[in-house]
Length: 207
Image (cartoon, rainbow, N blue to C red; front, side, top):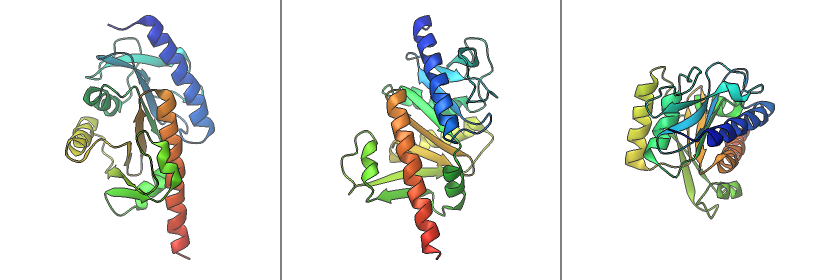
């Protein structure tokens, strides 16, 4: 159902990025989950409960779009938030979910259900964005332990308002995606900085 060599490469890449993300404080302890598409039916995904700064290829498994494990390992409880993206868009090749302090705090205090950004040069780091003059939007969803329900809500929103580049879950973290891990990481790095700018602006406006 999947190529073993592709899986081995994806597993090692997820381990490598896990160390980077942990070192930046975006994936503390066993939080977060990362994945890479293997084909039109399955993806490589980090196993549940693994420390993201210490991942090995044995901590990566393969799951199908229903979240069923195809190799040994325990799928993350949030698996369906990855597979929802892969199933809806063949161009998505990687998904990163992280729990940075900036994303978690801002998602808790932002009053609207959309975070709209405009005027930042870094917006152009997102695929397809060519000018700081455009407005980019990131939806915020309430945290929900019923992941199937949350994934359905995300799909409903994307179907109605567009897929965008990322979304936030309040008090939880962010999901972002790209054509491959390199692009996905670029999106995440840009998003983290943009969220940081916005949080800093909120602080300054309180002075």
